[in-house]
Image (tube, rainbow, N blue to C red):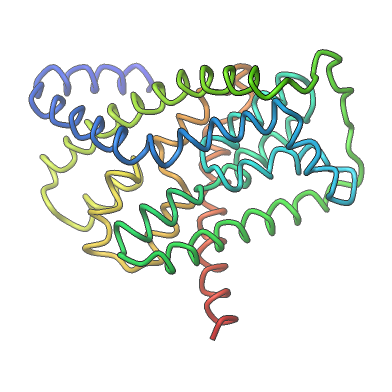
Amino acid sequence: MSRWFGIALFVLFLCFPKVAANGISMGLEKGLLVLMPAIFPYMVVSQTVIKTGGARFLSSLFPGKQNKIAELLVPSLFCGYPTGARMASTAYDNNEITKRELYLMYGFGNIPGFGFSVAYLGGVLYQSIRLGVQIYLSFLCASLVLIGITMKTKKTTNRFPLPSAERALPFSSALVESVTESSMAIVSLICFVCFFSSLICFLQTFLSDSPLCAALCTMLEITSGLPLLLKYFPLSFAIFFTGFSGICVLFQSLFFDRKNAVNLLWLFLLRSIYGIVSVGCFYGLRLLSC
């Protein structure tokens, strides 16, 4: 099956080079003007907080034995995907979290960030910063609820010993490493957006402007798909798809999974659950605010 997908993509891009080029141009525009300002600075900040020991200090303020998960959640809840997946994969590679905890972080801790939710989804698409804040809070609540429930079902935690090499760095060294690592990561993420934007252009070419096309485009890549989705579907669909994150973000997250520990189908299911719970949290918060 996989080989036929590869052959189909090859034929598609070979026969319609202009459509592919338009998709790359659209992806570069979204990646540089939307993704870069919404994610890159927060990737640098989150890595700096971790490398200087700030995340560990903040996690120590949380009660219980799940301090490592709290350490990963503190920056990832603010900075947005794929920051949570990136940090979780690093922790898993260092034997700091179990495979089950890796899945929980990928599924429920790798959430839309404050910048994307408030500035882009709320401010740009819906022209309401207040609505963007409400949407972000719904993502935050959904993550905390789902991780809280799933962590409680585990009676014991087999914690691996922390590697002896993990020490806090001076701020200057931490900042240099964070900017360097984040620069390499953001280039990869923009390339993912460019590729999936090409697929969106193919869908728009073959399906024209329709609700089905809008839904499929948003399922593939939310940055380019959300403006199309808003023309046909209510707010709840935008919240679900943003919480789900899109197939493009799923592959961006898997990029950091060096050990191939995360199964794509399981990740698809967990992200779908997270999207549904996010919609429920949004309307629950609206009822409480009335």
